[in-house]
Structure formats: structure tokens, C-alpha cells
Image (tube, rainbow, N blue to C red):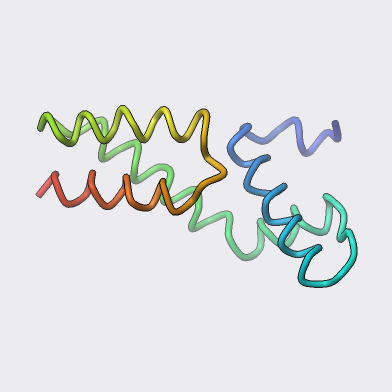
Length: 100
């Protein structure tokens, strides 16, 4: 495992690996970890981290039963199933719609 990879959270590593896969598929060859990491940092990291922070902050401030259930599910998905972004987006939508 490379040094930069060790400094990242497991969720970030997974996102970069996913990004690497899609970049490699698009280009037709393995783009490599460093290229994918750099591209992800430049184009997606800020929005992804903001989304992660917003979701965790929203969950820590929620007091409704359905929001709490959605937040618990989101935490489970983030730790065990974070390779399915559509599932995360649907859970975030539930959390945000139930908090207003």
C-alpha cells in the first residue's frame, strides 16, 4: 500500500479505486493509482467530502424517528456498502427530506 493511500480513509480509498476503474475503462488501459487519485482529488474530492460531512452532520442533528433510522442505515451503508452511490444518494434524500 502506498503512503498516500494509507493517509486516506477507507471510504476515500474505495472511491478512488472506483474512479480508477471508470477512468481505465474509458481510456482502455489501466490509468494507475496515482493518476486516478490525482484526478479524483482535483475533480471530485471536495464535493464528495462535503457530501459525507453534510450527511454525518445532518444525522447527528436529527431527532425524528424516520431520520434516525435513515441515518443508522446511512452509517451502515457508508461503512460496508459504500460502493453503491445510488443507494447512498437515496438514503441522503430520505434524511434531508425528513429533517425539514
